[in-house]
Length: 226
Image (cartoon, rainbow, N blue to C red; front, side, top):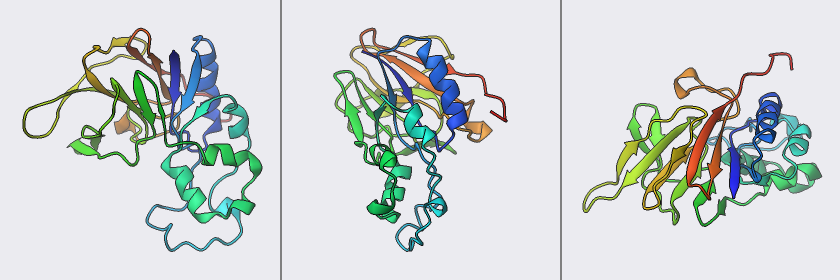
């Protein structure tokens, strides 16, 4: 199976259209979206005390184009979707939002565990650079979003102490082979705009499970008025 993996859209339909148009040229078997399709306007520290006022627009932008663009895509739930579900009563949600909001937390194949990543145990490798190196995943690769940074790591087990992390260099468009006896963390990167320190956008990853490779891709930005 060959997957194109996108994540962290945050309501940005313009960049999502650009990425999906590029993916269609690549002939993958399926597209996976790893969550944060929406942008929730209620912060994670505000959810517990938030009182819904009946206005969906105060919680998130319910743009139905997102459902159209992601039709046929395998969906995984992100923390933005969980926040929306926590504060908006079900009867107030448009029917088209429910498949996006109620997607499973993960997708597991013989090759990788695909998830958004927010519940994972994160380790700060250096200021601002995080990796879920201590996550327990049952396959060769853990493919995640959430951190908005394209990065590839190999994990090396040691007899004592924490797992050792090797940063694997990558260049956009060049496949990287993942050793059959290795354990890897694949941080896909984001579709939407993020701070410059986290690298370019919009990006996605091509996971060729049969070949055991990951290829990162970077699309040109669409016009600002698109």
